[in-house]
Amino acid sequence: MNPLLILCVGIIAVIGLIVVLRVNAFMALISAAILVSLLAPGELSEKITRVAEAFGSVAGSIGIVIALAAVIGTCLMESGAADRIVRSFLRVLGEKRASWALMGSGFILSVPVFFDTVFYLLVPLARSLYRRTQKNYMLYIMVICAGAALTHTLVPPTPGPLFIATAFNIDLGLMILMGLIVALPAAIAGLFVCKLVNRRVPVPMRSYAGESESKSLSDEELPSLWLSLTPILLPVLLISAHTVANVFADSETVNRLSSNLVNERIAMDADEGRELAQDLINADAGAHAENVEQLAQRLLQSGIMADAGEASRLARNLTAAEIFSRTLDGPRPAQRMADVTAVLGSPNLALLLSAVVAMVLLAWKRRMPLKILSQTVEKSLMSGGVIILITAGGGAFGAMLQQAGLRDAIVSSFKQDSTSVSLAILLAAFGVTAMLKFSQGSSTVAMITASAMFAAMGINSDMLGCHLVYLALTIGTASLVGSWMNDSGFWIVSRMGVLTETETLKSWTIMLAAIGVIGFGFTFLLSLLFPMV
Image 1: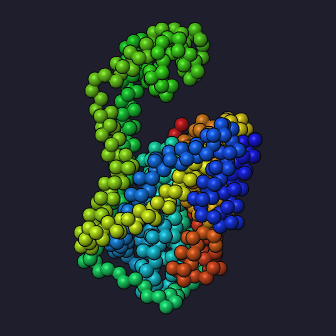
Image 2 (image 1 turned 120 degrees about the vertical axis):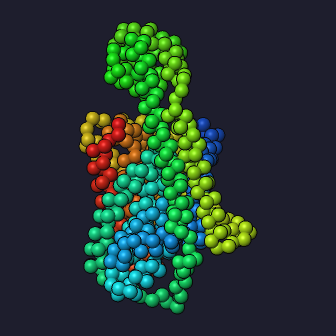
Image 3 (image 1 turned 90 degrees about the vertical axis):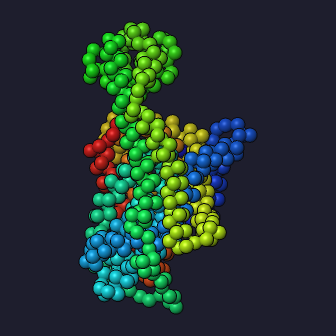
């Protein structure tokens, strides 16, 4: 069957099962994965087995991170650390800038904590502020949503961005950094969108029907600000440190190889040596060329050399194994540091250390017995397990699209020589993700499904004209567009904010669409200014 036809069948299956038949997202994704696998080429006896293998591969790569993030979020809530962060923002900025404080709180807390949990935490503060000021209730509600929604869809370790980074093989530290770079200006612009919504939909605060609002803790019962921030900042710092260390280690390797190439008189000067060293490392010549003929062929294939005779001459002079061996011998302090940060900056270990800190903080501040702490952790892991199933199901769906041969069908339809192609791919990713969001309601499912589809197409940075992180961020921003009554977030905001369905459509839906488009605009602008290829 034609790969593009298989793609259409897969999309129809996912949307039809979730939207029409109201099937659970995991059941829909895994069913669609099996259907696509059956339609794709391959031995019949392997078509179901490969779905399970793909599911296990994705679950193994991100399951630990998602589970630990769920534990961290629960502990931050129960210990009062999240409350302390919010109050500190309000104390520093004051009531006049309360909207900035609420947005900043949502922005930070939604990195390790799921959106609905953050909203539950911050809504009482918005209601309390309205009681004091008697104005801007809709503004307070919307800025919470804007700040929390942006980091929820752009910054790992929340499941959607984490899966996207994994699907496109993007360094997690780079994904965190670029997600924050896009989310921050989008949040600032979103504040003005929220003010416009507040003027157009001036809704007063209404009482909950027969429900009492949660009692807040006193300042003395809350942990300090630095302790509260530690579980959030620790994994970010460790993962980012590994990304930075890798940059220095790579630069160190290039410099040493360049020097050796100049010493061997293969390169004329330092500039030529550095350029050739970088090309050789990219071509991975040292690892794969075992003899002169293989090396000469690889130099031609990689584009380092255009003439076969010149390639043979260079290959005779360059014994790749020896050159690389000499490069890797001797002291390499930057590489040793990268080796250390590779352990400490591993997402699994970084999140585990953060989870331990959060658990200790919870047990200490709430004087919680170990048995109760264990039950609290178990409850958070149960909620995280559902997200892992959905995420791994989406990964299996994408892997089966790869088995269908979708990459070759898509690649052949693109010309790789213009900025318009880059824009076309990004716009296609934005449109598909927004359609998936509108169709089935979940931003996470939309991100997982869209990234799995585009990863299966085999789009690379050369085709895109910029780093794949921009495609990842495009999918993240698009998942904000199209929230309506099939989105659980819609009902959380409507119920907890005590808004009617019409008011929620006029405020929440429009605001999310606006910041999604704004975020995409920043993403595309960055892809032009800093393509990173």
